[in-house]
Image 1 (cartoon, one colour):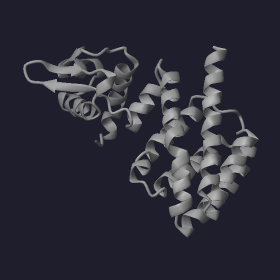
Image 2 (cartoon, rainbow, N blue to C red):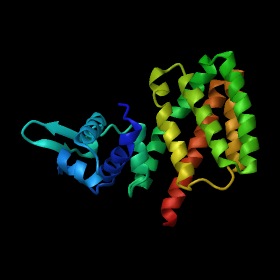
Image 3 (cartoon, rainbow, N blue to C red):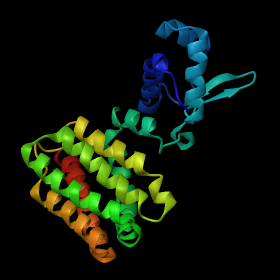
Image 4 (spheres, helix red, strand yellow):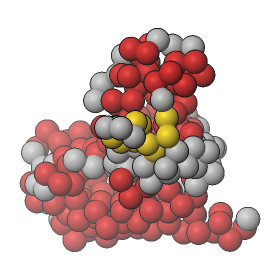
Length: 233
C-alpha cells in the first residue's frame, strides 16, 4: 500500500516500535492515542493504521479496536518491514534469515539467468561487473551499491522463475541495509569482485553450473562474515 509522504514518519515510527518489540503483540492502539502522540489528525492516523494492517503488523477488530500482531502475522518479505527490522535490536537475526533465503534462491536464479536471460541482459551484466570493480576499488560504496542491486535484480528477474523475480526488492533491501548499517568494508573484498565478474561471464556464456557456483560463493561469503561477526561479539 502506498502511503503519502506526509504520513511516512508516523508509519516508520510505529512500524519500528512494533517490529523492535517496544510495542509488543497484543497491545491495543487507538486512533486518538496515535493522533496525540504523533501530533497528526485522526485521518492520518487511520491511513497509517490501514498501511500497518496491510503489512500484517496490526489488526482492526470490531468491539476490540486495533491490536498489535506477532511476527507470525507480519509480511516479512515487504521491504519496509525488512528495513524496520534491520534498524532494530533483532538486526543480526534478520540478516541471518535473509542471507539464508538468498543462499537458497540466488544461486538457482543465476543458473536460470544463464539459461533464459536476453542478449541485452547478458551484455548489461558484463558492463555492471566492470563498473562494480572500478567503483569498488575506488571505495565509492553508494555507487557500488546501486550497481550491485541492479545486478542482483537482473539475475532474479531474468531467471525464468517469477517467484525468484518477486524477491528482487527483498535482496535490494538487504544489500542496502548492510551498506547503510556499516556492515560492509571500506572497499569490497577482491574475491567478491571476482565472483561478481564470474557470475556475469557465466550468464553471458550460457553456463548455468558456473553461474550457480559463483553466486553460491558470493552469498556463502556473506554468511561466513555474519557468522564471524556474531562469534566476535
